[in-house]
Length: 304
Ligand code: GDP
Image (tube, rainbow, N blue to C red; front, side, top):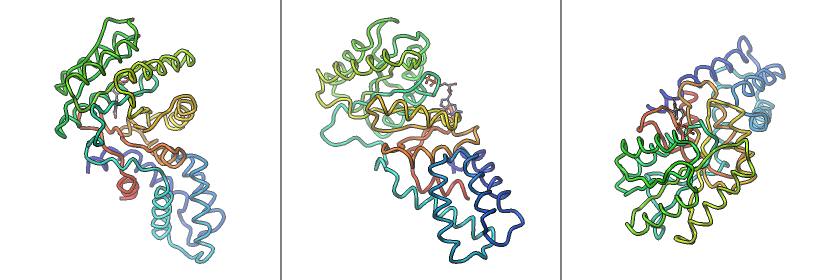
């Protein structure tokens, strides 16, 4: 229900675009398929994913051209769902952590403004709600506001935070955090990182260094590198995902700000195009507004 509400704008725009593409047609001909293709691309589904969907529909209608619009809608839903079956799945459900990985270390990366800090706050809240102890590390030491914001979120979620003064070495903050978290035997450590993309080389160096110092305390850390993407930027989010995954070993994706945007179709593009699972989606600014991504529910919400 939350998801339906969160995806309202995407859904309305998505269905009306599809509706227009097939309006007044009683058979599915080339024109309908072309219109449908345009509709999906303009709904941010991405060219690759759209082509896959249209190909599958084309094969099906080759057998039965005389389809009404409601049948075509159902077929579209089925084919989108079928494509997502092959998309990677995090398998993650109830904010559980893997056995033997304690503390479980999550390093959160992404460009400034995408909703990284908010997502960390939401994660802290959810893990805590699931009975886990959580510690945050403010390794984005470049922006004073980042540390302040993360501190506010740590208070909201009621979890401790490790920080140093602005401008200090991000690696040192990460080291302190994992050391303190390991000593206190916490379940989950979440590390914020800087996201200045204008200096890519420097950023990658910094992320690499943060990883290396963590390993001095917990050899297999980070267990998760979560890339946060702003879903409301549509194809830009896809582009950012390409850039980040090419240079950093990302293991999971979070797509934020899906409420208040009609560009939520980009989730389909991202889920289908990367070998990395979409693990979380953000559908609001509040602590409760984070959901574990579920492919089936997402597609159902789009068509319901
Ligand atoms: P950061 O710079 O990546 O750490 O971004 P922030 O976490 O500070 O978020 C930037 C802005 O996006 C803030 O105003 C957040 O409230 C907002 N935001 C983050 N996630 C969501 C979301 O899922 N939905 C909405 N509507 N706003 C969000």
